[in-house]
Image (cartoon, rainbow, N blue to C red; front, side, top):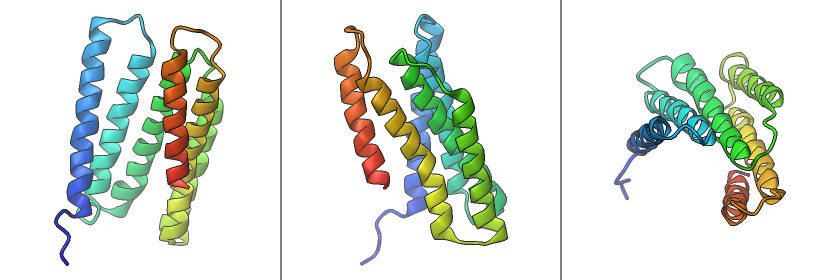
Length: 168
């Protein structure tokens, strides 16, 4: 049976959806600047959209661009979105630790793309950071002490834990 929609089409649809989210968040940010997480969510969404677009160009542009650069954008975007959620949960944002995780993942991606090509290990290396970010944010959301966003943050924590489990 033929596939009705190929993976490249799905990636481009994802790119459009995430880009629209970034634009909407950008608009919200221009209206009200009192809620800092919106800016991080906007920037992260733009990074993810750029990474997804580059990933969708695989086979059209060199692998260094379509894989390595795409992963840089995707992982940085995921981290930035996660840190926006940490800010919403009034939790300290561990920028240094996040950057270390990103650098390790990008070096691993480069290694398994160029030095010792291995798609399976490259997939593992690039899947671990979002899992770490999701679990960290979920724990922060569950430990939120305020009352104002407690229910919303608990729902977010549940969704992030499901996302982390799905990526394992």
